[in-house]
Length: 575
Image 1 (cartoon, rainbow, N blue to C red):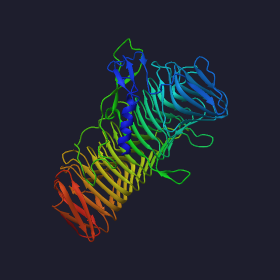
Image 2: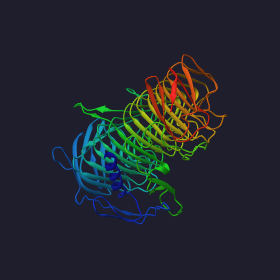
Image 3: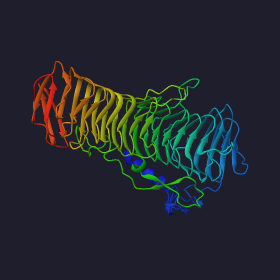
Image 4: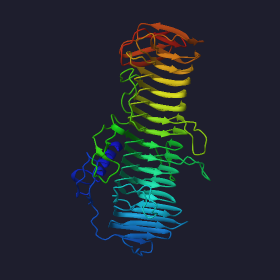
């Protein structure tokens, strides 16, 4: 239900962005624009919404109104302020060095075509509180590149914080539109808590240079032309490492042309607890590039004053099946074999970081025109190379990716949770891959699981499918493979040149259960296990393997040649 509600909210938010002709928004009024999405041209835009008050006011906690200068409402001292009403071609400007400021949005519409509608030049902490049961609108209607401006009163996003930590909280809704740059940008830390935020931005949705934290139970919908949620600084701060993205709760849907979640240092996704002991677990839906609901087109109009590109709605795919996603159960689904990876020219990954991605909880669906989960071992701002690790210990993750499902330049470790790579080029890829627990289903058009140095399987269930018609391996290591526990099911192509499980170095098994469907591994050294070979278990459909009191059920999407070979604790029966 949460997913469906968020999709509806996103559709409502989309009506507030640039479109063709007349568009009805969620206030029931009309936006009129002569913009052509095909050419990328943007003409003048008339904006209406459901804020009907003609007078805008900004008052302090004593009820004293701030007097504007040329429609700029300046806050120069700390305290609590309340904003209401409609402000066209105006700005809230904060310059209160070293002080804390809170601004409550109580049914506002703030728009500007020349500056950031809300611009915080300097304060120690700024809180934007969205009043309960109100809907608020922030429109950054600038249409030219101002991102490198030296004017310190302009700002470079709809809500922009040049110095100070930003928190957006409350129980109301804020709809943010940015026609050229980002929705929310804080040069330091950005925290989103509880409120509903709907963002449509040509550049990034939410950017905190040092850190972004999403906690408790916000609803966030982002449609953007670059990254959905981003950090950019991986330096070591005076008190903490910069570059983290923390997601500890909330319902989040991201439709991004670039990366959906992009951390300069690390991404941490898991459950969080509030001060009253309530626990929140995130629900995240991600769609990137051509798989998102929106894409970008180049401007073909030389007279256009929009120097970038325009967002157009393409009616992209919806979530394929609720929590857990498609393909449920082991060995479900199928995918073509042996093709080259297809992906975006620019990065369009689902969850990306340099140092680490750690997932301990969450219901996550990722549909990407690139890798779904990815770490780079690039150099950090500290001058050292990132470790590029991925660690999954919990959660329910479903992936559909045109390239790799999960790719770690360093070490990929799975100790728990459920991972369903329903579509991929290579399902799991890393320098070293450790499978220690969890339930993992992998379907790949190339190798299902591939490592450059080592694959170590000591627990959990790993079920790998590749097409019988491709020149691919089910499980492939350029180094070694070691199996000491767990259940491993590996299928391979109908070619003796390839294999369900293959390594360039040693392949050793000392425990666990290995079911090989297709041609038997040539290098496997099995110590202390019993080998059973059967002509059963090769056809498409459901099969069972019984070893003593243990019964393993698996499903083949294809029919394979060779044999079903079981390595386990005793002689196996295959049906």
